[in-house]
Image (cartoon, rainbow, N blue to C red):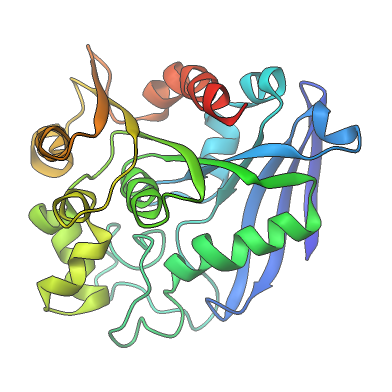
Length: 279
């Protein structure tokens, strides 16, 4: 593990870290913000943030505006990359931005040539939490998770699959039913093959239909999001949660789009919401 950059912010430490990953068979990079409370010998709760298509760890670090809120509430914030990278890592042959590099969809690929490196599910659910828990003063007994777009899909599916691990889950403009929309259908077919039964464990709506449960969800989506009707389909999550008795707070934010202008506007509110459940 190598800390490649460190900056003081709001009394805490913003780090960027590289390490060799056994899950992806590559070098991986993640960002971690340690609030000032982490310097007093204790362990602080942890909020995971999973990023969206085309992003790296750097997008939320540079534009997410989470550090002031995390410092106020004493919460560490971890943002991994969205896919493996490096020499020899395959990507979409047509250079597509919604598959391959930057678009791992938080699954363990079973199809070639993706299966060796594209194991982001194992990376974000097993390998990286173990590393962060061993190397930094965080309390793995108090974890929450959030994410944006493809990362919102990841946050929902991870939390629904491992409900005992996370105190709370939220999402910004998530892809809630990838098995029913073009982005998700392309990715799930490419990484997992044509058996749609294998897709269901990586589809939040399908997981809920199949019995997965969390007590509550917070989801924000902008009404001016250009992907709202074609790719995000929040009404499908609303229907699934109503049928399952899950307390979903779905907020349609007037005039906001899909960008980090939207995310940064609501980030402090999400951090506060998680803090109430991590305390």
